[in-house]
Image 1 (cartoon, rainbow, N blue to C red):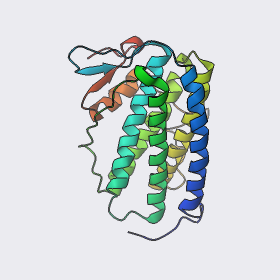
Image 2 (image 1 turned 45 degrees about the vertical axis):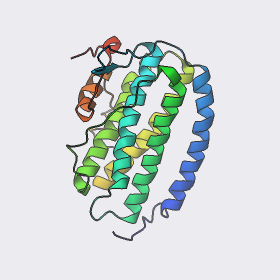
Image 3 (image 1 turned 120 degrees about the vertical axis):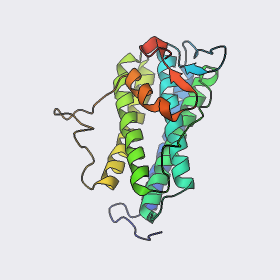
Image 4 (image 1 turned 180 degrees about the vertical axis):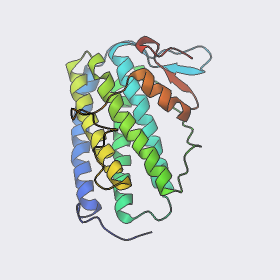
Length: 231
């Protein structure tokens, strides 16, 4: 393992302090979010072969919860089995991202309560966790897709409280995306694959996002009420 410290951040301590401040804000937001929770539960199909996120705001929240589960599981694996040659700075960055994603996952689970979809079982067999290039490429896909997902579904959220929280979370996800891009290629934090010619982040529909992430899940997630019916 390399022992270098990134001079632009002063090492992991600065990131850790930022994380702790974020965690405190998140706890307060759960109270607001949970108090306003309402809507239709996810669809419990009889044979358990798929999961449909449901409808309305709860459907959108379950959509976000599914993506946060996937991201949290990925970074937990990255930190548990670090790739060959990982530096101390990279370990700190990826650990902080892992902590954020776990908070996001737990945030949605708590807020949704009994309306939450069940825990998802991932299939990361296509990712080589021992190889830096493969891990960072997968991380970039997760982060870019995550930001596009929030941007693409935001207009469907009816509650102003939910929209505010979604905006706060996507801003953190965008920081993750920029950092991962920069680790892959310094200076590439906002490339054209992330930002369009007007300087606006690209977005993706629920159908596009679920089609991209379902291969990484053993039990597939669908959204019949958002134009992504059972295959």
